[in-house]
Image (cartoon, rainbow, N blue to C red; front, side):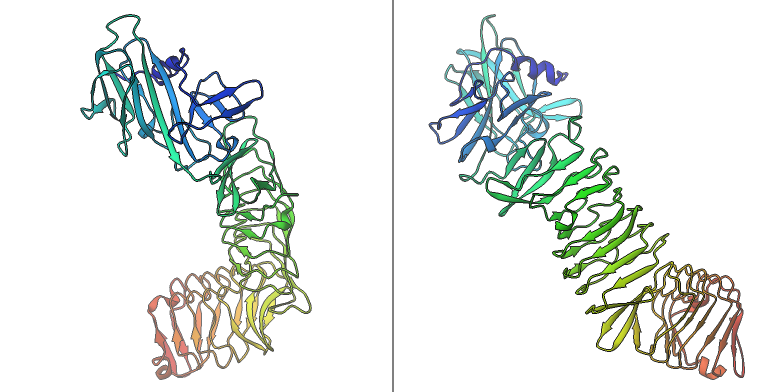
Length: 537
């Protein structure tokens, strides 16, 4: 049996005259709904495609009902009534009985689902079956009614959710009418309906706040390019934005006068025209990739209340030049990859009380310097290089990729180094460790193609993995006798490194622990020159 098209099998019959069964009548004059309670404690809506009000619309064969226009809905039951005047091969209900005929505003809603079908007609034999589409074939489950009584015969589907039903035979008499009532429903306590609509956007309640979850219709050409948001819905604040990702038309977010303080994961990811956020400083939480690939530019100033800045929040925002964190903000969670591949950032100022992580700036960058307040509690910037404070001691955190320092000598009060502290530096030529730091730092200089020479301190005991990987300008390395462990790929890809000198004997070299032989991979050096001989690779 062939399927009939949706508009033939449903939309045409929807336009037919219908028998009124509703307890709620559409009042076209005042554009609202008059409501009375049904006998079974359900509010019942019979939808006619000609009725368009604040609460009901009919667009492209889809009904949309705004329950925020209903006063304290206790139980809602939606009915669609079809008048059938000729035999139907099949009537399509939509995928799994949901969505095509009826679409409640708000995605991922709990209400989906056809609850039952009622057939009303004369005492005339005919058969109704229901089932599921399987490719081009409709598979019915041998569910049948033999005839429909004038008062109606109802079947409840529970969890079966068929997406087709079939009327076979019937209409023995040309003037016979069959009324088909399809019921959808859900239950909710008074005042707890989670969905709302304001303008072109949909909202959902989460606990005691509302989230804006994007446009009702993403393809609507009348969607605004400047987005504004209500401060409250039904007395509760609107605080979170989500669901606008990859919308190419959005240009401006105007948060002023709203309670918006959080951009959820991927909320505006790849909104390639978004270049302005008014009220930016009131955002306290930037979730993963929330503004990835947008066109934000110039200076970003984070407000006093900032607490969360997650990974890749501003990934690829190439037009940002300066990043400023307020002195009063005390962020509890800052991912160092929040500005990955923001290739235009030149400076970053950390607030006085900044703690809980720091943003790195790496990739093909032009980043020049960190800035901190004189009385900064946790971090200290010297000549644009970032250190972490612990009393009088420092840890070397980050040398910006385009910092002006060419020849770095480590201060004596630096007692440790972070991993990747000089990764991809494109200015640094020489680096001298002090005698306090005991390890080189994992991936410390990886990709630093300008580094020509490094001097280790007298107490250096471990050369960490990938420390000098792809440092193509290195020609000679002097390894102190204090080193007792060399990890993996330390000098991998150092294509100019022709000489390893060791300050100890061949015997002492033999006591060093090697993770494996990868430490000198891709170097042209053929061995290590010791004080009393050469070790050949």
